Amino acid sequence: MQQRISQEHLYNSCPRVVTNLIALGKVSEESGLTRQLLHLVKLRASQLNQCGFCQHMHSAEARADGELQSRLDVLQAWRELSCFTDKERAALAWTEALTLVGQNMIADHVYQEAIEVFGEQGMLELTTVILEINSWNRIAVGFRFQPEINE
Image 1 (cartoon, rainbow, N blue to C red):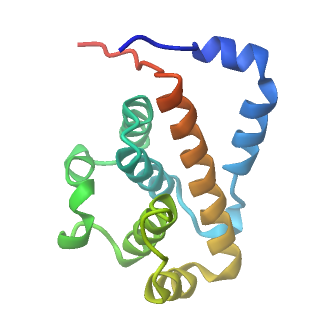
Image 2: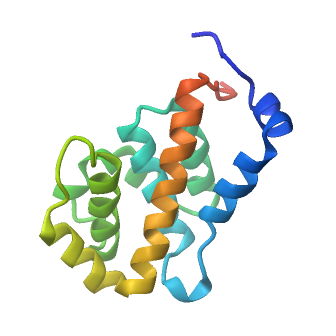
């Protein structure tokens, strides 16, 4: 597929998009949201949105921050595997619920689990990160951003 608009053109012509989305994804140190957890959230949302550009970027960033490739390989099956923590499961369930909100109502138990794990402030911050990645996914898919794949 041919790219429609380049990342450089977006960044240069509409810098507020980049600035605002980056700001939306910044979390406080007190949130309890680790870099590892955020990588999983961003990668899972990107998988659901079929954003190859973001999947490539976030899996590379996760590996650079020490995430195991074996966990990234099975992220889509997080519900059935014990290699994901309860905290990661709550974050991934909330990520999927918000990402797929147009397809399903958000179940009370998904919200309850996440709020119990993250608290109100952590939940708000997790939600903003999910909003950020879903926005980036829509930009990247819509404009057909292409990752640099080095063999």
